[in-house]
Length: 213
Image (cartoon, rainbow, N blue to C red; front, side):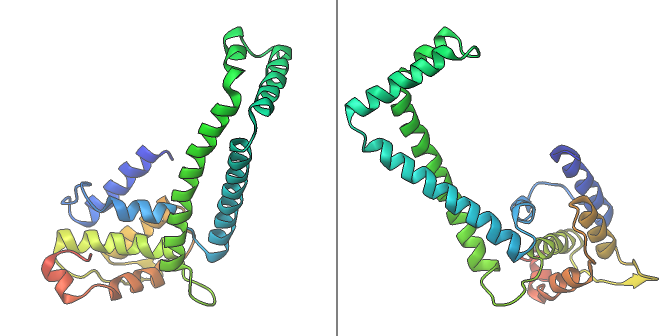
């Protein structure tokens, strides 16, 4: 399902839960967090290590290119032009563009290094908020989605959601909606623990304000 289809499906589920009151005009940040947050500490470590390694490689190449002498840059450009002339896939215009290959690479690597710094900062923030505890961490992606659905429930229905089952099937509006949301986002786990955690985060003050954050 593409992003538009997912959004429409989620909107339909939340409208049903709230009796048609829900309008997708806010709370989007929590959805984005839940979409990009890793499902386990192992997945987080794998992606963070990959980003760290790519960043270090980009930074090393950037610094090496910046430190090249003018004659070295000229030789590299000359070699690149010869290779481009031997390529049947490059046009004359593209071959001519190889002229400033070193400066172009430096600019491109600078751009990517900045992007990777931002991504590393985002992952460090995730690590501090979700993945720093010892032992096995809970599925934070599932928790955030459960909290987001609970937030919609509180905002539009002005009361605390409840969790219940009947013959192992969700029996409350919140539980049924969360089950569908988990299916949409392909979270293959029972909703009980995330639902109970999300409900436990809601205070009477939250209900009075009709907001949980």
